[in-house]
Each structure stands twice: as structure tokens, then as C-alpha cells.
Image 1 (cartoon, rainbow, N blue to C red):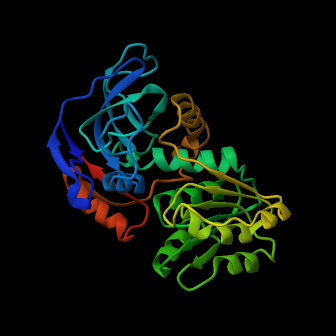
Image 2: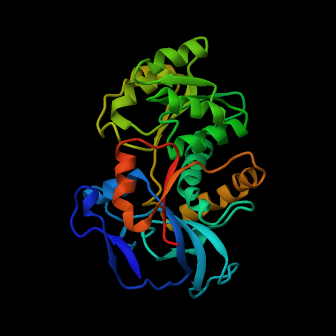
Image 3: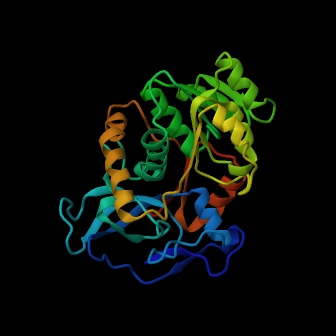
Amino acid sequence: MYAITIPEPGGPEALVWAEVPDPEPGEGEVLIEVATSAVNRADIMQRQGFYDPPPGASPYPGLECSGRIAELGPGVSGWAVGDEVCALLSGGGYAEKVAVPAGQLLPVPAGLEVRQAAALPEVTCTVWSNVFMIAHLRPGETFLVHGGSSGIGTMAIQLAKAVGARVAVTAGTQEKLDYCAGLGADILINYREQDFVEEIKRATDGAGADVILDNMGAKYLDRNVQALAVNGRLAIIGMQGGVKGELNIGLLLGKRGAISATSLRARPLGEKATIVAAVREHVWPLIEGGHVRPVVDRELPMSEAAQAHQVLEESGHVGKVLLVTE
């Protein structure tokens, strides 16, 4: 088969479409013939040499895919060869085939084409686990998501609205804010021109956000705590703004606030399977009912993954960028 390899870390040109050995499904795994994968910022970090796959995972980038089951490994039940699926991966999505634990499989939602489904696993699992399973966003609460036009952001807006929350977003252009509004965002903040702390407090009569989903890390840490409401919850899922920040513990204590920080890739298989099962139970009906949809900016041939990485690094996209094999 062919896959995107990284012979040496570097810029987008470090991604090389090359012939590699076919993977074989192990105990409890299935082999997927990949139709589509999706690009995530974690893939860029891996390409740069900063985010190695977990031990035993595929060395190729790609944290989600969609396609058809080509082979069942020993001990797999409930799935059949030919089933159209999408999957949460620890790596290997930028390839024509990938082996994945059966607990990380999801059926392609009714009404979606198989290639569109590649835009779902990483964002749905990230948003559901952080915003709902950990931060427990409830109806009527105010939810702030940074980077509202990203793949994570576009899914977070829709899921928060589906449960009856009031949604605030940050984005860097009016065009992106307008798109977020079309998905249901209520409070639109241009982070280049406005202070999100002031805007959130203004929009909530000084109360602040009950839940914040943050991809920036250190750069926004202090301001996120300032923006939290009493009993607010801050969920950190990224480090685009650095890894070390100063935390005002007194302010956090005064707000009885909570901070969580998670990633999906290195979690134990059992934890991933639990998250995937929750997504199938709670999110898939919303997708199949037309209340939530994947947002796809563009599709590119998988062999042109370097161009897709450039698109993400330039932040010139809304939603997901997909890589297509067929």
C-alpha cells in the first residue's frame, strides 16, 4: 500500500507519499481500506517532530479516517467485511489501509457519504469527552469555544446548541464569525479586535462563561480564568499558545473553578472505547436527525497532504480539511 511517511521532521515538504508494508489486524482489531482521512493540528506537530505516536501505533500521521472494513482480526464481533465505518486512530490515517481496535469504530451515520464521515471521529470524541463528559455543559449555560471556525469549533457550536446552551466563539475574521453564526453561535468575538474577557462579561451581565473549550493553552490561561463564571469549568485541549503559563490560584479559588487538560491519542484503549461508545449513543442520533453535520472546507488527494498542512498552518480554512484516497 501507499502511505504518507515522514523520513525526517520538517515543513510540509517532509511528507512523502511512499510504498510501505500493509498493516495486519491483531487481536480485537479490524483492517480498514481507507477512503478518506482528515487533517488535525496534531498531525502537524508529528510532522515537525514534536508529537510521536504512542508505542505500538502506526508511525504514519492521521488520527481519524473513514472507509470499509477489509478484514476482521481475531476476536472481533459485531462488524463484518464491507461495513462502511469511520474510526478514531492513534495514527496511520494518512494511508490506503489502517488497522484499528474495534472499540474505536463507528458506523457511517445514515445520510452521510463514507468520505464525509472522516470529518467526525476526532472532533466528536474530543468535544463530547471534554465539554460534556468532563465539563458537564448543561442547558441554559454559557459556553465559550476558542477557534470557533476550526474543525473542533464548528462541531462544538452545534453540539452545545443541540443541548440548549448559549454559545460564544472567538475567530480572527468577520467571515469566520459569520459562518459560526450560521451554525448557531450567539456571541461573536473577533480576537484580533476585541478582548474576549470583556465581551463575555458584557454578554453575560458580568457573570462569565460556565464552560470554556480552549486550544491555546498558556497564552490564554489567565484570561480564561478571568472569563469563567462562578463554578465555571475550563477544558484545555491544545497548546497553540505555549505550554507554560501563570495561574492565579486565588482567582480560581474565588470562582470555585475547575481546570481540566486532556488529549485523546495516548489514552488507554478502554478509555477511548468508552468515549466512542458515548459518541455513538449521544452524537450519532443528532447527526442522523440533521441537527449536527460535519463541516468540510475542502478535499485534497492524500498524496498532496503537504498542501493540506499548509492550509491548516495558514488558518485559511473553516471546518475540516480531508485527504481522499479514492
